Amino acid sequence: MSFPEGTSLDMQILAATALAGAAYTLTPGPAFLALLGIGAAQGRIAGAGFLCGHFVGDMVWASLALLAIIGTASLGTLVFDVLGVVCGLYLMWLGIKALATRRRADGAIDGHVRRPLVRGLIFGLTNPKGYPVAVAMFTALLANRAGMLDWTGLPVLLAAAAAGFILADMVLVAVVGAGGVRRIYRRHELWIVRASGAIFVGFAVHALAHALPGLWGLGQLKAPNPHR
Image (cartoon, rainbow, N blue to C red):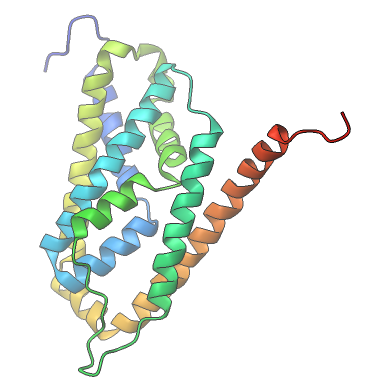
């Protein structure tokens, strides 16, 4: 396999990048729980749609993580504080909605996601853990080779990360769409939905608790001093 002229990449670096992408995707979190519910309740096609949307967010966070590792200045905390508030509020809304889930008169649960692709896109782009987890995963597997990375190799690194994301997504789709998983989910669907809602609320509180103090501190710094 050949690389663009001037790059110092080798197969070990690309394999480590792909492995980091796969590990990032397989790390449990709100999106994993959402995928479990969508895939088990609506099948592999819906689950794949969710992951296709989420893939956009995966690539965004992987790009930022690799940029930080290669050497560019990282984004300021304001961006992630604002993102944390947005995601916290979104997860809070989803969690409360799930906790309030009831069975309809016909015994079914009204939890059908009409647009899994859009739901996955929102989850992928509003993930408060996206950047730090991506940085942690890629740094852990690339730190000892950071000196070999340069800007010319960034497109190839992103392609390797994308390969890792896609392989992990295929594993997740196979798991959540499996007959045994779907049977267990349907048997305990109401309680799984409510438990997921409680976890979403927990993630929301965690995100808000970390984001709001930063925004509050920024506001305090900008507030005029009445004693001047």
